[in-house]
Image (cartoon, rainbow, N blue to C red; front, top):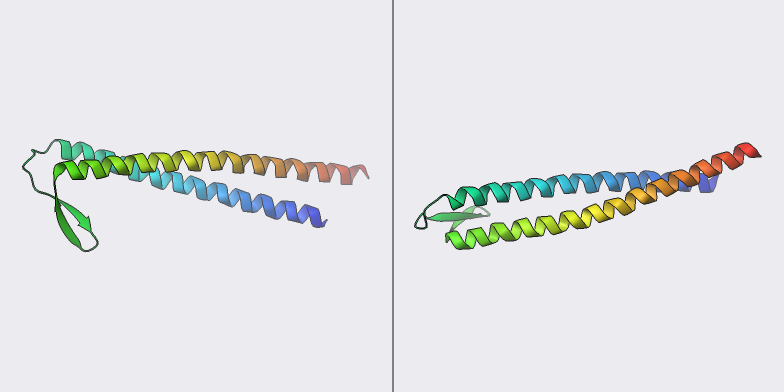
Length: 113
C-alpha cells in the first residue's frame, strides 16, 4: 500500500512537471515569435532611423545592427531552451508512463491474490 501511494505521488509530481515544461515552451515560443516580428519590422526601417532599447524604466539609443544582433541572440537562446525543455518533457512523459505501468502491475497482482 505504501509503495502504491509513493508511485501515485511520483506520477502526479511528474505530470505537474510536464505541464510546467509545456508552459515554459509556450512562453519561449512567444518570446521567439516576438523577436522575429520585431526583427522583421526593424529591417524595414532605414539605417539612419534612431532606435531605442527599453532597459527598466529608461530607453537607450542603439544602432540598428546592435538591436538586430540582440534579437537574433534572443531567438537562438529561446530555440536552445525549447530543445532542452522538449527533451526533458520526453523524459518526464516516459517516467509517467513507467509509473502508470507499475501502478497497473500492483493492482493486477493485488487482484490476483
